[in-house]
Every structure is written in C-alpha cells, then in structure tokens.
Amino acid sequence: MNGRSGTRGIDFVEVPAGHLDEVGISQDEVRLSGWMLWPKEPLLRLEVLLDGHSLGDALAKPRPDVARVHRWISHAGNTGFTFHRAVQIQPGPSLREIEIRGAGRSGEMISMVALWDSGCSSGQPVPPESLIKLIGSPDASSYRSQGLKVFADITSAIRRYDDLDRFERVLDWGCGCGRLLTHLVSAFPEKTFSGCDLVPQAIEWCRERFPKGRFESVRPHPPTPFPEGSFDLVIASSVFTHLDRDLQERWLDELSRVLQPGGLVIASVLGEYAYLRDRCSGWRSWIPMWPSSSSARLRSRGILDQFRNNSLRDFVDSSYYRNTYQDIHYTIGKWSKHFRIRAYIERGLDNYQDLLVMQRIS
Image 1 (tube, helix red, strand yellow):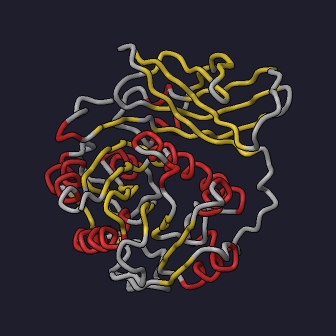
Image 2 (cartoon, rainbow, N blue to C red):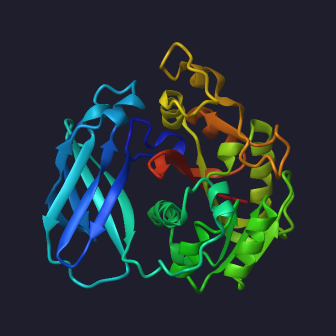
C-alpha cells in the first residue's frame, strides 16, 4: 500500500507494472520470462510461486525496451527476469496461478499475479478476427490470454473486498465480443451474465456464444434497456478509459440505476502511470511529447479527454471515442458522488490501468 491508505475510508493499493512474456509449464519444468517494475523503488529479488508454492528465485535480465517507455523511472531497465527450472508439477486444475513476488530495498513486498491455462479452453470458439482486432487483441491467442489476465485481476479485486459467491446477476458493460465473459462464464456457470456494447456484431456473437445470457446493443449515450436494479455486480473493464468527462458522469448515473443497493461496480481508468507510459511510447501518437516528463499537466487539469481514438469510427461519431487519462484525486472527487469508493488499486488491471472497487449505498 502507499501513503494514501485509509484516506477518506478508501483502501489505496499498489501493484507493479509488468508483463509475463513467456509462460511454459509442463509436468517436469517451468519456464518464464518477463519484466516487473515497481515505480517506487528497485526490487532486489524476485521469487516465483506456482499455486502458492515457491519454486525459487528468478534471474535478473536487463530490459532496455522497458527503460525506453519508462524514462521517468531510473531503475526501469533493471526489471527483466527469466526462470527455468526442472520441477515435478503435480496434477491440478486447468487454471494455475503464477505469482512473481518482489522485495524492495525498504523491505516492502509487492507481487504480480497471472493465470495460466493448461490448454483445456484452447478448443473453445473464438470470434472472427475482425472482432478480435476491434477490441485490441492481435490474434486468437492474445484474445484468450488477455481475457484470462483481466479475469484474474477483476476476480482478485472482488475477493479482496467482498464475497464473490453473493453476486448472482452480473453485467459486463462494454463486453465487446466476450473476451472477459469467456472466462467468467466458464468459472461461474451458475451465475447469470449479461452484456452490452456499441458494436452490434460483437453482441450477436455473444448471443450465440452465451445463449443463457442477455446481450444488448446499446447507443453511445444512456440509458440501457436494462430495468432498474437488474444487477448486483457491474464490470466496466476499459470503458471509462474511452469516455470524456461529461459522458463518464452520465454513465456513472446509469450504472447506479441498473445496480441494486449494496451492489458493486469494478471499473478501470487510465491513471497517472498509464499517462506517463503512453507519452513515452512512440506508437501512442495521440499524446504530444510535451517537454516535461512529469505528471504536472495531468494533476493540474485532473482529466485529459481530448485525445480521439478512431478504433470504433465505423460505429460511433469520431468525436465520441477517446483515450482519457485522469488523476487519482479527480477520479475520487467526481466518482464518489455516485458511489462509495472502497478501493483504488494502482495498475490493478493488466498491471497498467488503475482499478476502482465501488459500492452503491442507496
């Protein structure tokens, strides 16, 4: 946790930035590679755990590519790791938890968690390539792995603050073509899942793939066709990240309307880390390379919502879809008018976007 813990009754949590680039697990060996970065301080050692059991320490590896997109962090180039060890893996569930646990100079611990699928779901249907690319996944393999990572982060955040078993009616708001739903429905077949999205073709695919759920094509502005109090859990993964400030307010009201009192909203935003990282990434052409590498501009304005994104130009007006970055204080100040914010998890979604856990209180 960082120094904001407990402020206004909100739990502030930090997870590292990072990514598992390679995962290979068989009956007799584990092979991993990737990078893990804690902006606060360098990590002195990285321990690898599989399903909670320690397998040993990873080997450090220089990552100049990570340093290039984290120019404001002096130790970013020393964040790579590799791990290869002969280990007898006992039979277990198809989903295995991989944790990379790091210790900083201060003695604080931080960890990056991902799920690995043994391949049992590799035969499940996937959407057409056109829909997969529309949601930002380059291919079917990435569609599965990215969905699995979001599934792990979302369910972990819920379990940290609530009982996942109590949620029976779940809305995936901005469900796309089911990248997250694929894993939710598989893990919780007894629950009722619904979804909505701006892309009619994606909704049609979800209706065919998940016939027990309700899936609706919605307009760019609220309301949705769902009745008041329809859900006890709403998931908004990478949706507010594309709305300007006024639309955020309107959609927060709508999510409150369709949520039962006491229900949860799990929503992601592009926070300070995402803003700084995207500024240093050459392919993020929508952000000008301002002279200063500090986050003073974001903090002073609270929200930067002028960067247009043309990914959905065939479905919405070009002025609608954005890449929106917002300061933590802005987000809490605005969003707490709609929900009780229980937690703010920095880099809590895919070790990149910030994640909020919010509750409707009346």
